[in-house]
Image (cartoon, rainbow, N blue to C red; front, side, top):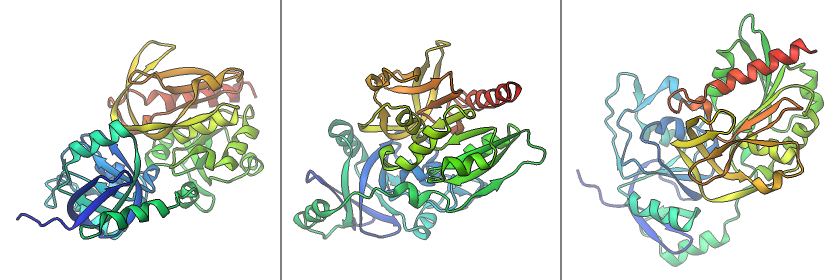
Length: 365
């Protein structure tokens, strides 16, 4: 059955794209970005790092394998919208318990299908990420542009997706105790740590260094999350205070927070990195890893001069900084997501490295 377009996407530069609604029907102002992954729309939908964003999928068919109970990255998805070429509402997958559209409706996530995603993604690639209004097809362009001009970009995304209290994720007989600072952490990160004999205590994004030290961690993990890293200076100050007291590992936003804590700077990329096939070079081994990425900001390489941080990984597509370390303090970070099974196991060794650092720190204690 051919549907009549009922939704419209208005970009702040005046471009318009029409399509059909699925999921929640709601007017929203969001940053529009694209993701090049061919699979993994459930993980994308439930990744807290996509808070306040409308994600355009470059792969044309979305929804065909439904939603599986075990594959969520968070209990309460906070992505703003999903924009696709073709939406399939009759999934074929024995693990599926629900359709993508029904999940999106339950969590208030807007969906637009039937969009010329090739044209839209080229526009984002050529002109960069912009603010977009998802609205009724009947909304006049002038009215939509006025809404976009008056919209204030929220700066509290991390506080909205972080946990609100300290909570433990124990593993019987765990050898190591990791305190994970939750800036919008994906569940598979916790699972990756627990599978390596780590007990994990998850703390809110604004937990102080004193509170974390009182938990007596063997290591501290700084998670991924949404938005600009300079919006979470409380976390930056905590990491700065903890540096050198125990091993630390940061992923994505955590990588940027570590850079800021040591005095480096970050900047916003033109359209970010979002996909499951970004080649990254390990400068120590010379190996190339295929990585999963989702971020708008990057570490300024020039600003690392004068800090104790050294670059360990580089993105082969654009030369951006993908990894850092401070040998003195047993601190390291990566911009990409080793828990997302890219490659499919190219980067899993980074969790093993973190465990080895905790073991070595314990031997020298």
